[in-house]
Image (cartoon, rainbow, N blue to C red; front, side):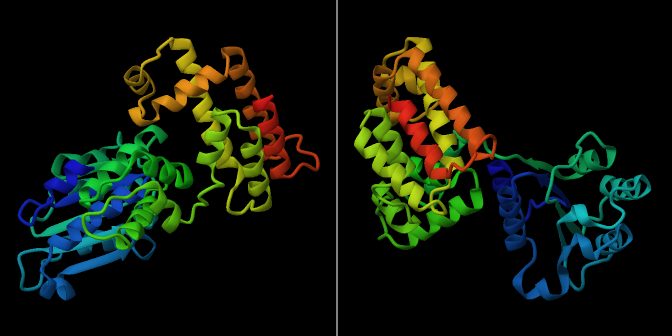
Length: 335
């Protein structure tokens, strides 16, 4: 995605962009960059059209694409939710789009932004790649999120600490739009030249300083029974702010990695960071957890997490609340 953004300059914008996939953030970034550069502000009223798929059929789309700009060098046609264009799933219509894509009008920039993934094996989709840009925006894996946050902050000229990154990622997950929105909110509240640390994330993103999943994980690493139970009670009393599913997922990911550390026999910070593909700042957490939990116990912990996950989804839950499930889970991990 970054390569496409770098390539979009006023004089190098392609005639065609086919943007699809499950991650809308990257698509929106590309569309915004094109929109900011393609048409001068004073020409936008006549030569920039932002359309929605549900309001178009294929014939209307091609009519827009083939019209000439009004007293200007080029026009910009952006179609959002292009998967909703009427008739776009029909072969005869796809053939018409393919014919246009293979020989696009040089004075038109046509951007099709889809809200889902399309089949890149189809000829009409491939045609966009031959004459323009074909981009599949994929969801990031959890282990890619820290680098995404760090790079985004770097692009804004702001440093962010590893712990702040972890808090953000664990609290928000792979919702890139919300992640970047929360980062922007923090940046607005700091002085020029200041970095972002965990305290700022807790303050402006609304994460409890003492009662969050990061602190729960820390208490479990240290086998701090009192602290772990205080946090679980808080979660049980505030289920809307602390839903059980993200907690289970984060703990499962962590203890699964601790299991890998045990199996590998690796003991150095750098070795563990490389093995787990995490920042070396967090290596000691895995070392301490591996020291405090035997291989056999970790297998039991993973089993307990799987049972808790099933119960959180309504399997053999009975009358247990989310708070009850978490209390039992923490008890089984610590005892």
